[in-house]
Length: 235
Image (tube, rainbow, N blue to C red):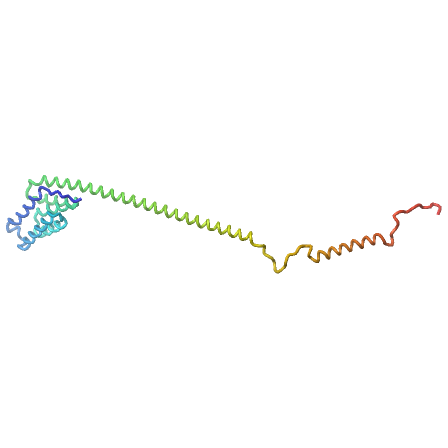
């Protein structure tokens, strides 16, 4: 989160930078008047952008000014921009760089306090980032599990549908088999046994044999009376 609070050190540092640009001895102006003029312009642009809350533009302007004129005050202003942008690790870095080149030791305690604050907020920021990453990973795992369960359920549903379709097809085939007549061999038409000629012919032949046997048994040459009568012993 970007902070809208301006450090009480800011105005003093800005004035220090401006004074250094105006009052620096010739040795400091080794870059030439053009570099100093451009540094002044970038400083003014950065200061204006900072005042209206455009911290990205302010950071760019202060960085360019420091490249042209490497004064410690620009490092502090760059640290302030990073702090406002929520880039606490970078802010701590530039505060420490400013401390290492600090022209006024009386400001050191306040700047060290800013370093400690930025480092603490950077740790909190990192902890929140890791927590968000873990939460996102948990969400991804849950989504993957849900998708896997959905795919498994869909596969099981398709399999059940296939089995039901196969069962219905088998039942339909069985029903058709029960309703269709039995297949006939060739063109032979099955008739009752009473209408077949060979049955009657066989029956006629059997009857004739029976009749012939009865006649032969009753009128043959060896036919004798059933009663012998009396026999005279004197003959």
